Image (cartoon, rainbow, N blue to C red; front, side):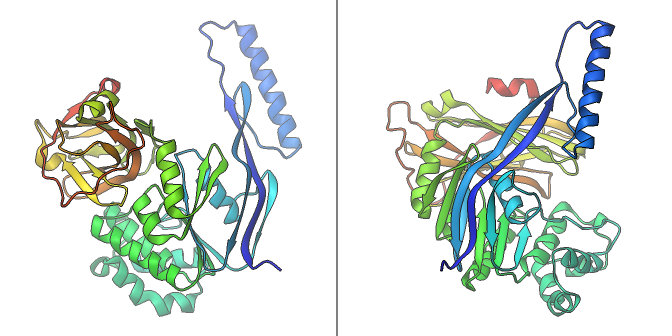
Length: 419
């Protein structure tokens, strides 16, 4: 008899997406017929209990297709892949948040999910009250929360403000408290979706240390992250998803190399907008500049409120996770810091970077003058100085951190593609 705690067999998940037909000219008759057709379709879908789709045309989208794997007790598995590969959909199925369209999954043991840090927090309640509320939502008993309360508060580093309503917390304090609650769950199976990129660099290391402790206790962990250094440090196995399918399953090093090679041509990436907080919406790198040994990066952002100061940062890492070079617009600005913006693009330029040709990983972050607002870890794999070199050449670790100037300025959003 198999000792698998999770067995997925040909998991598939289909979504229906509505599209509005764009026409330069429509007669009133055409509009009325289209509205009647949409109303009839929506009525039939409601009667049959199917998903209601808004739009003139309906498209089938398979977020997952025929995904199969087994996890045994004590496995710590990293799930990697580009945005839209199906990673979060897979975790939602394993967490029983959504059902698969086809296939089946068998799970043995209690499952706890860290899919969205801060889900269930009430802004009008204090930090103390939200610890009990969020803990209950995550499946902890009242006595268990009370026993771990002091440990949770100490881990979050918000002791001084524990009786303050969380609506007055900074975004960093908010996510630190949320992760502290979630990190003190004690399930047999822990499902984690990119929640280590919270707070500042010191707190991120603290979060990673906590995850290592959980993994060291023999629990089964599924960990989704774009941070290959964290996956290497935490996991003993990895899965690579692309287009909703598993295209790699094996050792972390082998899958990481496959992931790097498969994304070797990436020079741009977009992200979903967070309507509640400032967020990075795209990162674009000038590919021609890379071949010359220059780095030009555009970071586009949006914010639900005007930012007192829009600050950007970038960092290059080697395959080992070692940081080689970075720049922050607070210290390297060549013009005025962008102020009072709800959207914009920050451009970093570093000319003639003295780094050996190879493949490096780019991280970026958005901040105001005092606090980090959003960060994207190791989201692009860049072939630096590879105009006439082997495109799969690995990066080279540095003896130390490279001190080299990078200049920043704010550009118009429509200029970002010209980088």
